[in-house]
Amino acid sequence: MAVSDQAIPESAAGHGRPAGLGAHPVATLTVASLATALVLLVFTVPLTTMTATVQALDASVTAQAWIYSAMSIGAAAGLLGSGAIGDELGRRRTFVAGTLLLGLASLIAALAPTALWLVVARLLQGLGGAAILACSLGLIGQAWSGPALARATGIWGAALGAGVALGPILWSELVKVGGWRLPHTVSTVAALLLAVVGRRWLSESRASQRRPIDVLGMLLFAAATTCLLAGLTQLRVDWRGPLVWGLLAAGGAGLAGFVQVQRRSRAPMLDLALFRRADFTAASVAALASGAGVLSLMSLVPVMVERVMGRDTLSAAIVLVAWSATSSVTAFASRWLPGTPRQLLIGGLLGCAIGQLAIYAIGPDSGWAQLLPGLFIAGAANGILNAALGHQAVASVPLDRSAMGSGANNTARYLGSATGLTI
Image (cartoon, rainbow, N blue to C red):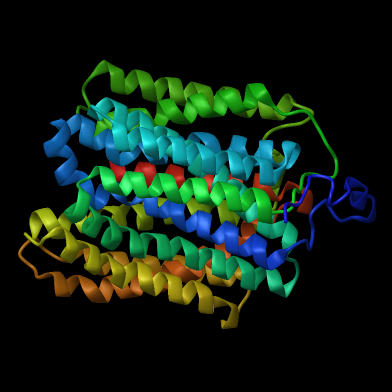
């Protein structure tokens, strides 16, 4: 049965409860978690399809760098804006639009005749994924509260790990069956199905106090992050070229302009006053570190196993499961762990650092089995970190700005990921 936008009246906000709170919580969590897992599945496509893609499209080294980074760039550019749009125009509406865009972008990727078209498709996948990630946590934050919110965000965090765990194995097998285009085709179908299910199952919710969308701030931030991350991506190929430093300079200037606009705006896209809150700042810094250290390293591990250690694509995918599956388990189990969210954030970051140091110590002549201890440690810690970040992203902001909090947190994560992939 479809739930109309009028099913939850906005007058509920007069009682301190934004529209949508408590409505269909299990359905909301299910759809939001499945869509989140799909975004991470799509994110991992190049990890196991790059060899076949390069051969089919004759992709250059520069094109390969862009194929790897484009989705992170699109996500980082779109997350804050998606959160703001979701809070104002409706989180379900924005979520469904994101799934539709992800499906369309995946179709473009499946039909891409050149590497350039594939890069464009990956950028659009990032924008669609941004709307999904920002509004999925926002929807969960509206449907669950109190101790139940911690359990719900633990499941959402497990979905992140599940996407990374299943993606490389699923895609490597599909490449064998139907070539590198088949994973993108499957992603198209899955995204469109989720759009239909989300439209029918999710209840609409939005901020109780409506305010105009900060269009200038949205455009400035998107342009600044795109220039900055494009410069970092190009830096991997040729750090001496004027294009690199021009993009980085434009990105820095754009971010400075964005901060000034947010300070002067009566309805900023990102309320800078939130950074005075220790919990919001800690969650943002932890998300940035998680992206830079964890996501980027785990994106490179399959490449190292396949190209340096000489293993096949499936072996590389299975090695990654040691990290991602462990991450899913600990994210789900984190609700039973003692300690405050802040303590779990710190513990998760320390565990990730220990696991990554163990991986960095592995030489090119080592066997893949020597990667496992570090992967297990990093994966377990990352699961705790994902659950804690998901909780803090919505708990550290006003309830009717949950999508903005989610957007800010995930923006930090993808900025870190794109930066980590570069350095």
